[in-house]
Length: 576
Image (tube, rainbow, N blue to C red; front, side):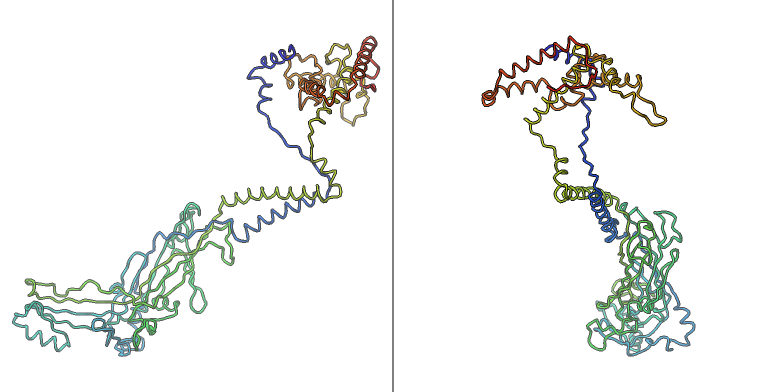
């Protein structure tokens, strides 16, 4: 009890801020490792690790799984119709009936769908491109034919009513009387604007990506790439003959109407056989056609089929042209054109207006494709996963070493520590017996403590100072012996937690340093031994008298030694 009290006082004297307290509180455990110096097993382990690393690299590269991909968002598409070569073609033609315009005044282009939609006997008229073009968000349209209805109205009570009615009949117009007071003459004709196929459709476009793809922005308006938010876009278009046309960024993507349609495999002067109309089927110049321009983005380097982490900002586009021929296309009725604005009271007005119902080529745009960027989260997860997989290499190697290799039993025994409480207690008891003898031999004055002088004397008597040393090294000296002795005493006090006295070491501290008390204290061990000795099945087979005689014999031997000088070899352990 006195020893326990001293120990508690020693711990309390060091306090919360002492090194002893924190050395016992903030601890870290390192698992024991066994190194097998068998090169075949080491090679097998390295091969397993290499196979896992190769698999990781292959899985990332083969499927480009390292890359995040997304379809860029089109932020703007500006398309328009321009005169192109239409004016030059009209200037070079001798007349509208020349072979350059086979559709002009050509009865074979007549088509009648109903009384309302009658495209019979078309005529040609020259127009400027802007008169025929219509612009809308992400689309542009060009009229290729229209039904023009001219309506002339006048009061039926007017003095020139009859002459106007005669003019209407002469023009093969249709007379209509509304409300009994409003007379109206309607004349109709089908008009093919000349050289629409030589007009051009041009467009610019821009895109952007999300932060997952580096927040890139690009536009065909920019000639050079200046940053991630200011990138150029080169555009590639494959022509029907297999050649490719390139549009450098900074220039609009532009072609004539006939060129756009040719890429889709048709022309305005082809018969539209997919409209399911009775023979003869109309021409595309009459039905019109929807043309979808598909802009396909990519940042895969040219000549390669896989994305690159080094050249991810070089975005370009490929164009595809897909005409839709199953429906009529156009912008239908446009706002009326008044050549004489209505005047007079309602129902008796005089006016002249032109109504046009048009068909034509309608261009729309669709954006697709992928741009790639490094998916850092995926790569990090893959690396972490590979680290986990590397443990599989350890498991396989352990199985080979423990269960396949010729020395497997030796390896298993070395790697596996079996703890049997009874065997361990016996080991502690035997160690304590050996340590007691060593302690007794080192304790010269037999006061129950080992001092620095005892340790220095032991090291000097062991012959360490006479051991050979390499050139340039110092031999074993008194200074070294003194430093070792004081280090042993100081560390034994700090680790064991007994009363602070760094000048000596008792038996309990001695055993702790040598490791005998690392599993259980000697006090607890003694209590377990006493409990074991009291068991009936044990005491029945023990000769207490013989053991008692041996114990007393040991005490007598101790008394004899204490009366003699210490033996010459302090480290000798007599056989008992």
